[in-house]
Image 1 (cartoon, rainbow, N blue to C red):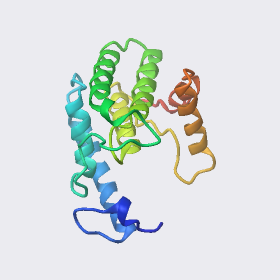
Image 2: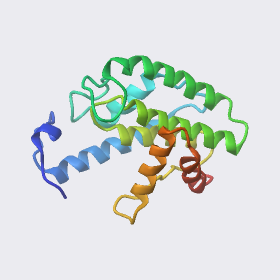
Image 3: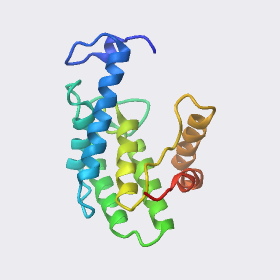
Length: 187
């Protein structure tokens, strides 16, 4: 499945097989999904929850798990702004999630939750998986299944997803909202 890159895949378990590393990361996603399922329906969305989810997915493998990004990247805000933006983000998500009164409001909340997280890009790695887990958390606590915004290795769904995020970056979240609305299915 890919080539092992020690700069990107340096890990605490010294795994050098990319397939094995991907399996460990997938197990971390399952751990986080189980954690999400056990949360109370009236949970408080805060930075501690974001950090905890990231640690559940990546903590067994990487020393950067659950730590705000320390490098600037071509994606996301400046590294110095990450902790402050994460607090503002959590407050806004918490407000949105506590004021969902309709399916349209839920779609707004899910769109904001997913898009703003990707804009902040708070961690060195694993941001996409964490964004999807957080989006799924809001979806599930409102009686809906996971939101699958694209299917890996399936046509052009990833390009459509990336175009939706880019449009949202330019203040047009209609494509992202449509992708989410198409995926909303009751539990």
